[in-house]
Length: 366
Image (tube, rainbow, N blue to C red):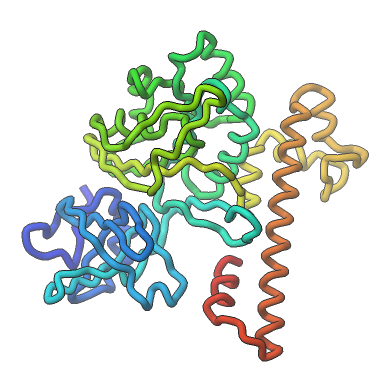
């Protein structure tokens, strides 16, 4: 078995690992000597974090001013470096260890920057539910975001006890899921929960995403096997739920796995990862090279293999329309960010007052 003990940890916690810690993080942390310990962010509250350290203790730690000045923001799931200040009885997050995977989305509204949601995730459960929440176009967006993160997607269809036609709902999901596993469960009655076990092994991190009211909090409680998240009924008129989860939070499971809950996402911006889009629409991108024109937009060009697949019934028109819409949205966001960067560069060279931090953040996003 690999040695995954934490250097820099002394006293009774010495040699006890943090869930999810591996050789990569151990190597990155090895350069820190002296009063430093490693930890993992379990929740974030503005400038204060809850951090899990060796020995399963959770401590409070502020974010150092130097880290904030550098434009670095720790998120749930991050492995971080803590400066231990025993004389002050406090800890401070002074650095973030390199992330294995990073779940992010485009910022809502007019902002062009990416919003990081969570880090170092192995698998992401895209949770939906039978009824009005089941929307395959929204699932396509979620899949694009998840594939962009580097984590593996699994689609969870919850509340199957509320429908007499679960197979119909599953078939609808499979029409856009490709090779992504689709698991039907009832988190409330725990029906089908055993089918999730292959995706949440010891030291593996799973994150949950989905809209409000799909039962993410109930699923968390079922996985942890105790009530740790507040749950509320959905509204009968539109199947929408209230935001019972308001803070992203990491939980430890009885089998040694890790799960991260996320507040319901109202607006799903897909960012700029074309790789995620290509994987989410692999049925289209695998046919596209057969088009007559290399830069085919799959609209009105002659010799378009994708349009031919639509005529043949291999691909639905709705799915192609969705692909083209998301592709256009991603291109627009990329161009908007590029224009913003050029504007800041121009203002800088004209001697105008441009914050170095703002300019650096734009460059880092490119």
